[in-house]
Amino acid sequence: MRFVARFLVHIRSFASVYGRKPDSRSISASSQLPTRHALQRYKHHDRCNACLQNQLQRINSNPCIGSDADSLELSARLFSMVQQVLRHLYLVAIINVLIVLIKPMMEAAAFRVDLLSQVPAEVLPIPVDHIPILALRNSWHAPRDTNRRHEGIDIFAKRGTPVRSTTRGVVSRIAKSKLGGNVVWVLGPGGQRHYYAHLQQAANIRTGQRIDAGTLLGFVGNTGNAKHTSPHLHYGIYTPTGAVNPFPLLRPKSSDEHDSQ
Ligand SMILES: [Zn+2]
Image (cartoon, helix red, strand yellow):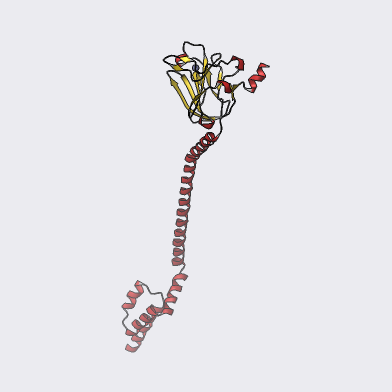
């Protein structure tokens, strides 16, 4: 009977080792096996390469363990992909913001460079609407108070008559001054600065605005030190080396020539 009982114990220990994959519980269970034979079996099972492959196959074939591992791996991959996409979107957003911020500045700079490289026109349209050439008077360098010379010409017209830019350029300043009243400065070709003064008011323009010849700048008035004079436009041209006389440059606009016929 003792022999039979020992044989049954061997059978049970054998089954406990080979019947399921070894884990902490099986190790614990096998360590409690009463026979040396079973321990040797277990050690062999635990170290043998073929048995390890067997164990891996069992783990992989276990639907619960396999699906959990797959899910974890899939989640990790998705998380990594989302991180990469977010990183790219973040980069694209930064680039777009930089483009939005820098592009206007680059365009304005390019426009100014182009403007400065241009040769100033030798003929300019009269900046006040409906003024015939014969109505112009050359008041360049006429004496003014306190030993001043008139650096421009005065073009008389009805109050509120439109004043237009003689050139393309950039509105460099819109201001109110003691002498000029409401004034507009335009940076034109060749770096020349065009000065429009005594305006009743400036038009709907802004500093830094790129304009073409003929753009409405304001309306004839008598603001500044012209408040006791008839409404007129004071028009001056300042080159990098000083003021020049606009009178010989001015010609009627084609539309005004058409009107006078
Ligand atoms: Zn003047």
